[in-house]
Image (cartoon, rainbow, N blue to C red):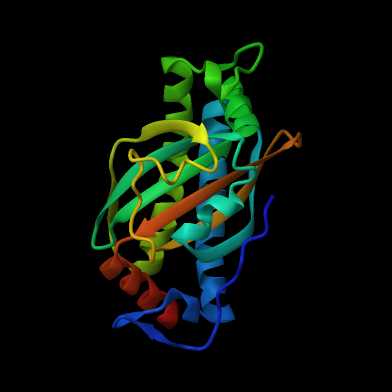
Amino acid sequence: MADLRWYSIHSVWCDGRMDPRTLDPVQFDALREAANIGAAHAATALSQITNRRVMIEVPEVAVIPLEEVGSILGDPAVGVCAVIMEVYGKVSGRTLQVFPEATAARLTNVLLRTREPLLPSEFGLIERSALKEIGNILVAAYLNALSALTGETLTMSAPAFAYDMAGAILTTTYLNFGADDDYVFCVATRMTLDRGVDLPAFFLMIPDAPSLEGILQALRVA
């Protein structure tokens, strides 16, 4: 799993907005705690629908520029699956739950109880729907934790599915995430099924400018 760069420099303002790079270790701890709470709730929900023991760890939480997100998703020539959702409310933006190919294949195999996992390039409607449901569970858990942190109610759109190379997943017209100067909340996760092989994944959220400021304000008083 690629290392995530931490941004915790001294307080600055950028174009009249608070710069997310100003978060100090205490504020990052608050963000990490929200991610861990979300991961715990997601693990419980996934355990219930798969009838398997699911554990989710959060080894890394970071705030990184949008332009650098591609570098953390792994080999740019390797395919990844993404579940994309819009977020509505006083905190709004877009989320992207990214699954490397091996993770996507294993998760759909477990959820659908098939004999052999299919590669994402072979996914049909059933496999895509299964992965969207898993992504929906993960995103909802993280957003509920963020909602508790900010005190704002968040709602989500129906999930959409995308499969592309890691280097292109954020640059396609379909995703069109935002401006070059946007920042991304990135949660790197590691799922384990029945104490088996670790399955890495990434939760990304790109809040719009007013929402980003609200989140940063919440972290500063957390």
